[in-house]
Image 1 (cartoon, rainbow, N blue to C red):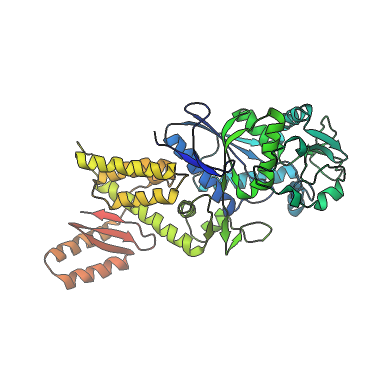
Image 2: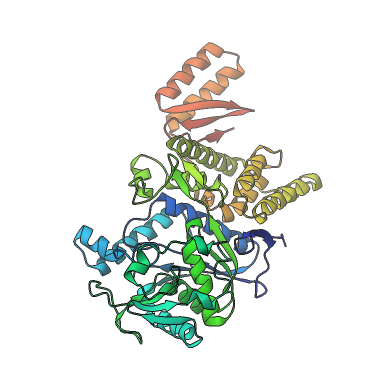
Amino acid sequence: MTMVKLYNTLTRKREEFKPIKTGKVGIYSCGPTVYWNQHIGHMYAYVQWDILVRFLRYLGFEVSWVMNITDVGHLTSDQDTGEDKMEKGAKREGLTVWQIADKYLGQFLESIDLLNIKRPDVLCRATEHLQQQIDLIKKIENRGFAYKTATGLVFDTTKYKNYAAFARLKLEKQQTGQRLEIDPERKNPWDFLLWVTNQPGHVMQWDSPWGRGFPGWHIECTAMSTKYLGESFDIHTGGIDHISVHHTNEVAQGYGAFGHQTAAFWLHNGWLKFKGEKISKSLGNFILVTDLMKKGYDPMALRYLILTSHYRQGMDFTWEGLESAQQALLRLRSIVRQLRETSQKRSQLEELKLEKVNQFRQRFDLALGNDLAIPQALTVVWEILKSNISSYDKLDLLLDLDQVLGLKLAAVREVKIPLGVKKLADQRLKLRKLNQWQEADQVRKEIEEEGFVIEDTTGGYWLKPIKTKIIHLKK
């Protein structure tokens, strides 16, 4: 089996990935907060993690992919002060917090479906796992890692000596800021709330051993990841912005509850930027997948564009880049159509070409096994299409690799060419064989007037609808 190496934020190294349980992989991904639309910046991350899941399954692993849906009212500042996001969304639209959650969960699911992101095996809503969160907080408290203040139950980071290690934090440079002014009983400015109480203005509140309130921001991920994947699981994913606070606190919570790390590997994606800035709601520069469709783009063009970047580097989104990705995708689809029409099932593959097929497959696997180097894997795909292996083997190999890339190439079917256009193309082919070039050129113009471009091939021609640039081959 192909060796897989992944960059582990925990160690700041690329490490060989070996699952805790042979043949099985547990992955937890930080999911959306459903108080507003999920934009293409969010989708960048989910496409990357979809590739990770697809690749591991392609290699033969049994993968369980879990993702949380944050539909509970947390506070929007650095950790736990500020306005509740869910209530902010409800006020904005004149809906209840529950209606807001359902509305934007639907928008999120629509977006991942449009991008052919496989839905996680478990999508777990925070509001449906309150008991699990309370039970986990009890474990942390019983092991001596929490103390009470007027604001709620707080995680005591002094009890976890390696608190700063995960994000390489310089705690002595941390500023107390707003949070200690609101909660002066905290021992350290970086101590964080496990359960929030005494917030009479919040709608979403529940009874707990520490008073009526709601869970802190970080506890849901530790509670739900360990519920579905166990106290020790393989991979935890999220954005680079999660490292210094959210995932640092998840690591601390896991140690507080269980005395050890929960995830063996922590993977973090870079940002999708627009005009050099992070795409975010606060900057007002966010674009939705459906916005792309309104501009005439195929959502799969965005997926293709994302595949041209490495997940840890992020990328700059431009309309020109999206246009190029759409043209590359259309070209890829046209080649699939061409291969479907020209491929005949082989009876036996020459040893030399069989070796070449295996080499292509191996190079594709090696690229993805090298910390998900998807751009290099895409390069292999285009090399396959330019190679001299048979049409049958090209198509067979391409559709096999697309199980990982997720570009839906298996769904590509032959384009129907109008009979009149076919007759004109056949007429032009005959004229060219008779060296009647001027007459053939006149027929070409007639074909273009019908909305098609014709390109000559060895013994035949390609017909491409002008608008969609889809190729149809006739021999």
